[in-house]
Length: 185
Image (cartoon, rainbow, N blue to C red; front, side, top):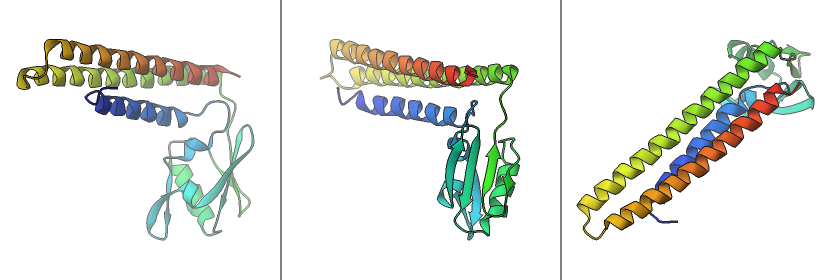
């Protein structure tokens, strides 16, 4: 790959990683521990992700079990989950916290599928913006650097288009997989 294309490839890779991270927080019918990724708790004065202060397991398809390393954290973690946008009320026996995910209704599944599509479209726009920035940079390069020919710029633009197509296809595949996961009862 041309070294002039590499920074744009890196940006596009980050866009895909960001999309996958966002989609990981959307809960489908199954319990996914990644829904807890954005929730932090106060641990000795520091905001820490739940994963760093507790053991998280999925003993059944619709249950996430959180076992804090210190019993004093149980109340703090429950409070953090209740104030988050998760919409699930945790239950506890004093040592272990359980999150029971209800079955999604058909209507809720369709809403989530729409949300996935929106996030996918936003990622595609980001990829296209990176392509536009690259093409602008290549045109400026042609004007400022006399050793860069019009053919070289055309070649760079073709390369960035191929890269864009590859990442758009990857986004489509990711959206399709997540939608299928959500719509599966």
